[in-house]
Image (cartoon, rainbow, N blue to C red; front, side, top):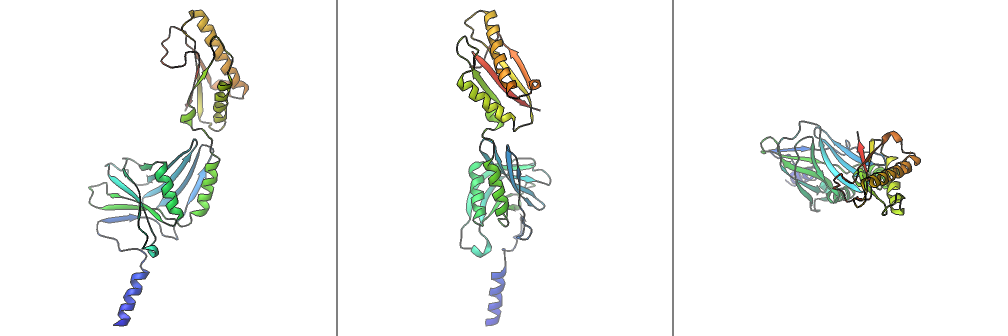
Length: 283
């Protein structure tokens, strides 16, 4: 009788996970299967783990300071919106440690199931470093009868995380959204660049060096409406020429630049009444 009890106790302790419940579908990797990959450039860094038969968990750190965690599907896209929970669970041998609730969100429809912002992404990384296993759980997108969970494994994270952190530390300080619309202002009746204007232009030039996807740089010149039309046109053109010359002298290809000169009769909805607006466009 005592032997039977001991055998039952050994079986209970040796079980790595509780049995799968009816109406529950789990996706994840074992410790042996767990693999992390890291890649990136000056604009974005990626840290990911594949979840077999489900898709992948993807951390993305972007120029300008953005950080997200997304779950990408490699199966049929989601067509119904469901509420999902992201929480971190301890390994079986640390059963006394409670789960950590990270975020609650409504799933997207399509291949990108969900995107968590900086706070949730950071918390998930912290929990992974502690050996916890973050998992996304939600009711299935067919009829909601079954519970689905997609689990991320912390095993073999360390080296890939180190590469991801190194890449993130070298990201460009500006994102495309930070730099895509900029105003170069001038003093009254002047077409000389100010110190502040040169600082803005240097930011744009530095960004152009790391983003080869920029296909056009549109310069739009404005002048004050207080003077006559001819004077405004000439002053606006000189300002455009000044900005364009500064860019081309800094090795910006002239073929990327498009200049537009608006005279004082054109309605100007922008605040730049004495300056040049710069807009960057991608293909």
